Amino acid sequence: MSAAEALHARWTPDAGAHEHVVFLVDGMHCANCARSIEKAVRALPDVTAVRVNNATARVSVAWRGHGATDLAQVLGAVTKAGFTPLPLAGKSATAEYQRERR
Image 1: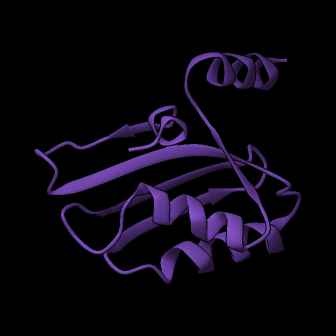
Image 2: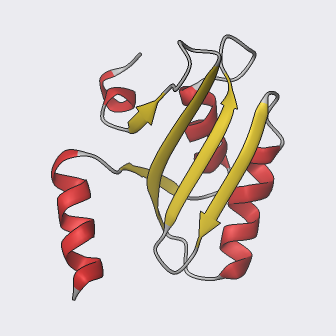
Image 3: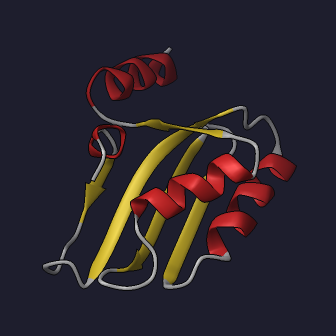
């Protein structure tokens, strides 16, 4: 796992059989943007769920662990779709939470 990947809020509820990540996306401004991201990520093998919220610029992805898909591929799919995935952890998470509370 790269240093950039380590920043993302990621967890596995069952010893790696399933994985889940939540992150922000820079450049998502409308429902069409959200659909583009969802389509790009959903095309990856082993992805079981994708939720994209254009109002909060938040993306949630679940996939089968130990499969053909990993976090780097999920983030790469978002990047290939023309958007920038941003970690939702640490200072980024705090700043986003404060922005949403205003």
